[in-house]
Structures are given as structure tokens and as C-alpha cells.
Amino acid sequence: MLQPIITEHENSLLYAQTIQNGLLPKTRHFEKFFKNHFVLYKPQDKIGGDFYWLTKKDDIIFFALADCTGHGISGAMLSVLGISLLNYVIQKNFDNVGDYLTELDKKWIETFNNEITDSHYNNDWLEITLISFNTQTREFQYSCGGGEFAIHQNKSIQIYKGNSYPIGGWQIEKNRTFDTYKLTLEEKAKLYFFSDGIKHQFDSTNKKKFSRKRLLNVIDHYHTFSMEHQQDLFEFVLNTWQEDIKQTDDISLIGIEF
Image (cartoon, rainbow, N blue to C red; front, side, top):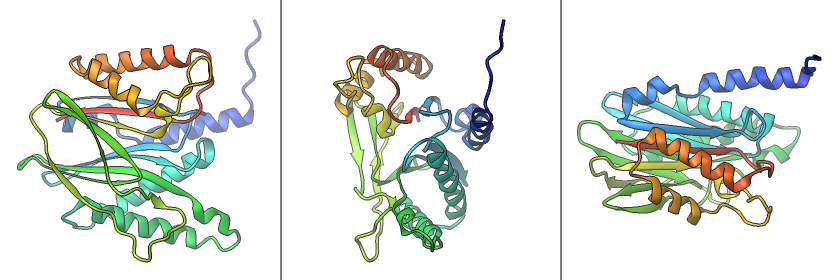
């Protein structure tokens, strides 16, 4: 039987996939910080522009989900940049998570201002949701740069958003800042972070998008199941929805229970 021929390009993608996956938090990191979780992460082309990030400083857990411009190789390169800059800015001592995004935005723009030869690249950006949770006081903060997420608690689900503009991109504001919001998380609150890819995935007829409304309905329907079981159910729903239609974007859906 003839073995499939792997091209040099495919080898490069597989190697890049190994590197990108190596930068993402592992299962053991989630298990160390949260009661339960699941990660549904499906780049469109082995590698992609979606990434998630997790760390802890003293008593405070930080988590982010981001969606960079594009997908494939270009998106993956931007995701590496995003992870690197998050690791840098989190070393600063801010009281509000929005200040970390403001600093991230400055560093991101500085990076592309070094590109002299082609101003086209100055439009690269990332949409991000950053949260913090104090394990002692249970204070919960979030800040969004074009991102959004959902919380299921008190028998209902609600979407939370922040600033509509992303990190980077063409800036209209002279001094762009990102707002911080504070919420009370009930015991066993379940948080769901997602990128645009899952909302924009077309159905088997290639006519309808999955949509935020449908996603929230699925979350509301399955939230009582264990996080591990929820991941299987979400994958089944997505696979049934798209059938043989090609994936149109990177897909990320992460569930966390505090």
C-alpha cells in the first residue's frame, strides 16, 4: 500500500502546530486553578489565530481568550506575539484588568510601528477577553477589546461585553483605554469563552451561520452536564451542524467553572 506523500509545506505546518500547542495552557494548568473545565479548540488550518492564555499572580488567576486577524500561518504568528506580550504586561502591577489591556494595546501598536516598508500591516489586530479572579475575596473582573463571553449562574445565561474596539488595528482614539468591569460570581458559576469562528460556522446547506443565539441556547440546554460531557456534546452539535461543509474560521469554545 502506497504511503501518502507529506509535502514540505505540510511538514512545516505540523511543526508550527507543535510549537503553537506548546505555548497554550495544558490540562494540568486548568485543573490546578479551576473546579472543572473543557477546551474545544479547532484551528481552521492546523494552526490559527485563536489562542487562550492562563496564569496566576499571588491570589489572582488571570485568563484570556483572543482571536487574531486572519488564520493559518499569519494568524498563528500573531497569536505567538499576543501570548508573548501578555506574558510581558502581566508582570506590571495594575489593580484593574483593563489597564493590562491598555498596556497590551500600546505594546502591540509599537510592534507594528516598527514596520516601515508597508503600512498595510499596521491594521493587524486581536479581539480579546481578559478576566481576573481573586481566590481569597472572589472578586471577579473582566475587560474586553472586541471580545465577549457568557456566564451561566442563577439559572440564567447572560452575555458580557466591554469596549467594542480591539487591540491594535487602525486607531481612531488619541488615547485608547480599556474599561474594567466587576461582577459577583456565585458558587458553581460557569463561564463560557468563545471566538467568532463558532458563531460564523455555516450549516450543511451553507446558508445559515451558527450564530450567538444558537450557541447560548445550546449552552443553556447542556449546562447541567459535567464540563467534560459538555465538550463532547458541543462537538457533536457542531459536527452535525456543518456536516461536510469546510470550516470557515478558527473555532474556540472554553468552559470554566469556579
